[in-house]
Image 1 (cartoon, rainbow, N blue to C red):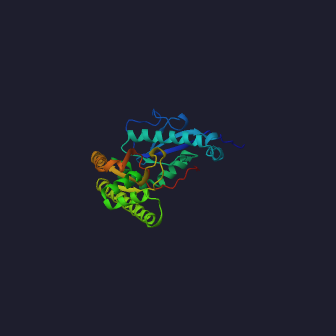
Image 2 (cartoon, one colour; image 1 turned 90 degrees about the vertical axis):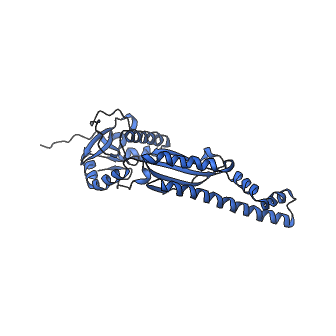
Image 3 (cartoon, helix red, strand yellow; image 1 turned 120 degrees about the vertical axis):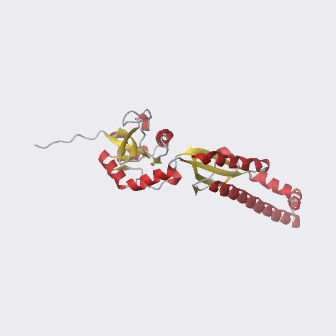
Length: 281
């Protein structure tokens, strides 16, 4: 007689790894994750796996392939993913976050995966304990900055006089040359200031990563000239923030300023552990 196996009704959605939370037992978490699914825990070899059970019909490979084409669905699920991770991080001393959409078909496959990377994960968690990731972005108001350069250098005032001319002959050429020089001086000053700040912050952190700059609509015409992530010990965070505050206070007329946010999950300081956003065995 052939025995028919019951079809799997749910699969495992993985948020990350942390050290065991003493007060949490498997199913008693009040944290909600993807689409309101309860966040659960189980411990394997001293590591706490943070996950939710989600319906297989919604999160199979075929189903996900169509859903990820909907930006609104992705935005909502990604927010739930991050909020669940953040809630766990606030209850733990650290967390290794996994990418949005990391799923396992079975608990056996999930355990096998964790066991194969146990040493690496444990070392990462140990190194991240009692540390926080902070983002620091430096912006420059280029118009204000060039005006400040002109104010501090009388020779550059010739550029303004040339612009008021009828833009003919040598006056126009001189104006173009001086405006290029003003740009060069302004850009050089902005880079120097950003470097001096990041050098000071490196001394107060245990690790840093330089990320690409990009345009933020809420910053108007201000240009992002530096984008860093820092890993900071808990007892250094006040000094870290104070250095940035002092830097901003010293910049003339809001020409350059730094904006810091955090704490964030330490995405910039965890190695990839070998799982892409997909359904694994």
